[in-house]
Amino acid sequence: MMPEKTQSKTIRTRFAPSPTGYIHIGNVRSALFPWLLARQQNGKFILRIEDTDQARFVEGATELVINTLGWLGIAWDEGPDIGGDFGPYTQTERKDHYLKWAQKLIDKGLAYADPYTVDEVEAFRTEAKNNKKAFLYRDYRPENPPTWDGTKPLRFKVPEIKRYSWHDEVMGDLSAGPEALDDFILIKSDGLPTYNFAHIVDDAEMDITHIIRGLEYIPSIPKYLSLYEALELQPPIMACLPHILAPDGKKKLGKRDGAKSVDEYRTEGILPEALINFLASLGWNDGTEQEIFTVDELIEKFSLNRVQRSGARFDEQRLSWMNGQWIRKLTIDDLFERVRNFWPESAEQASDEFKKQVLVLVQDRLKTLAELPLLTSYFFTEPTPDWQMINDNKQLSKLSRDEIISLLKTAQSALLASEYDAESLQATLNTLLETTGQKPGILFSLIRFAISWAPFSPALNDTISIIGSTKVQARLQLAIDTGLKEQTE
Picture 1 (cartoon, one colour):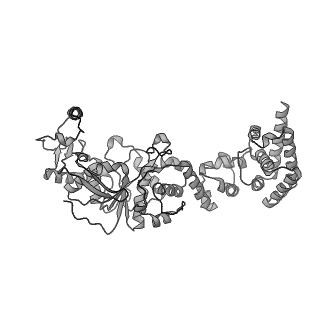
Picture 2 (cartoon, rainbow, N blue to C red):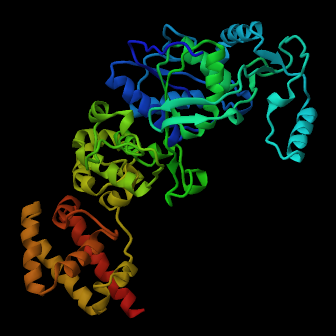
């Protein structure tokens, strides 16, 4: 019988990554949801490093986890770097804890030394296959296993073969029959525990009240329940999150589908606020049409019963859109600090005041911070004329080269006589439309190309004002000279 269900007064959730490489968006969502729940309920959020799989251990991966969560603002109350009352918080430092619980199972006759070699186990698998049966290790338990001395794996002996039923806070009421139960390894021959054993011990000792993890763990939960029962432990509240799906919505997102590490998104200029907002929306909504949420709003509104059961499709374009929305929300001083490492090299000698002027112009067009060089390089260095851009423009390509050069000369004269504040320049540009009889899509696009040779730019009057009269005149003249030269060749 399971002990009567009780719950700690303080909600305690955890994120327990394995340091086996980069931290991806699925990892972060598995940290974000329990963090939101803990913050909402004035509980505690624990960071635990599950490093018992030494074969897959990657040097520096733990530091990467800590750095990434710190960048995102997902702060923990207890963990390997800050300690706490329930440490250690790194599994390889907790070996004596697992041995203590393993001994309880041995004393109960519910754990045994596994005497079989790899070849013998493979023979059992072949036998089961030939008999058209699923291979279950419990069907081949040794009758008289040797005393466990740590040199062989220690296996859990399922005490009772039965159906288990449980409630998942996301997926609802679930159950599984005896076929889901099997004897599994508790302690490996290297002396370290398996995930199946270690996380149950750790969660019990750390008083974890809620386990929020991926959907892939559901098939193993009956085994966990059997072990909880054997150890006379009350299972925490469980919630399994739906998969993050590839853009086509047909399979779980993977590296082949363009999945990136969180560090890559950071390098590409995705804001932490946007990534948190985006990941929270993958499989959860508050029942409204709202899409942009601050962290405080997410903490206030989050609930497990609003997490959907179906998979959430990953849409990087939506992430870019959301990032652009967050960029627009920043003050110019805040944005300026965040883009310090994203300026083009040509901006190195420019003053902070000038760069802020440029940043004000492009803020509404940025979708990622990494787009800054593309949008601003012509403010800091002289662009190279590229008449092919004009030839490829649907509207400008309808004009002859003579008509284009004539328009450039007319614009050059008008701008030379203009004051260079944004308001005066706009009046000059409007007058140019009247005198040339051209549409804004033709005249303004032509001037924009001639002074920037960029596919797009901010408001033309503001762009001209910041570049300044001397450079604008020189660039228009270079465009005219280049056009005339190409015309004669």
